[in-house]
Image 1: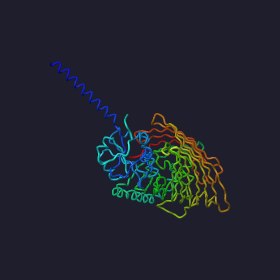
Image 2: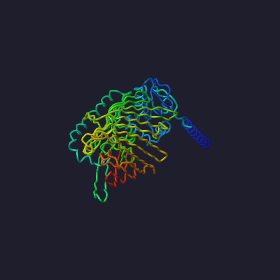
Image 3: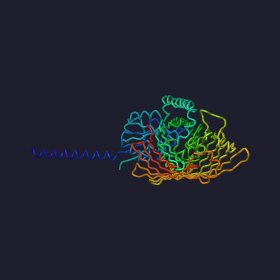
Length: 154
Length: 374
């Protein structure tokens, strides 16, 4: 009787562990990065070319207002996804590009935020600003709206 | 920067330089209060710093050698709020203290910016690409046609007036850029070309027009080639050689072409310019022409190492009365160099070259540490 109970317990733990692994796998599969703006922002659509321009120091306007790109550097992964999928440059090349912009036209580098509260405050302060974050985070925050999907993990 | 300028005039300019620096700092600090008050305003403050050691070894018959150490900081401040832009650049070194650029800009639309103030001549592609940011340019020295007025430059590189930058998108990411400027140019001073100084203005300076037409196959990339057109009215102001020549004024026309191209780890930067100088003299006028050309090649290997070389020449220089006004200008150079980038924003560079002026040849060895802060 006791042995039977032990076997059942091991089976249950194994199944539970398998279940947790499967859930983690599903969650990892669904990781996405989205482009966001403040809920109050009039911005509706920004295509990938415009977005690249915004973060490379070109001027992109809506309603005669210049759109600002804010960088989310809360975690390394999201920064890597930004570099690879938005500006299509290595960190080193992007830094150099920003230095050239400052030197040639006095263009300041995009503001960087290493905590989400400050990023949300900056987005709310300027409705013509955009940033990016994990989709599940954006969905859970009432202060931002999703403009488009930037990256999805396959 | 050979340090030659320092010897003759440093003391006379010291008071002016201090005044200039104080005014620059005042201007620099002012926008900070605006930035704090206005969340949309953004600013950038950068320090391009470098320490150079140059060793010059003149030819055997001259038997002269000299060493030169220069410490330099190039301060860049940029401020953007809405469509308004402000950019200033100040050089502070053991060799000079000068307000290099002071520009107020207006972003007319997504593809057009208008500027007013003091800026670098748009027809000097090298200077428009690197300005005084030594860390960003691979080589330590600049080619003759891109040398600044106070570095034995032979064409004006600073203009005070208005400039318009326009970008026209073609197909996809192709673009065509036009930059036009009109303003006050240099005079031919006692030792060198003297640009119009915003902080010490004089009325002798006359007009210059610059036009640069560029084609970029990908606007997100730096690869480009283009055409350069420049016309300057240079008045003689105390130059002893010019007085001996009976020279009063030079109407200088420059037409040139340039290419800045990268393929994988290779980079080529080249320029060919034709200079036509109408020398207006007391007795008779004279037309003086020559070419100025350079080709610099760079190859990046092992990620942080760059080997580079440059060849410069000035065909027609031997007969040029105009170049006699600038006897220390380097009109020939064969150079090789090696650069090592370390940490995130530091570089060590070694450059070895054989150079020639109109009268002497020499070997030069340069060593430099450069960085950008923060």
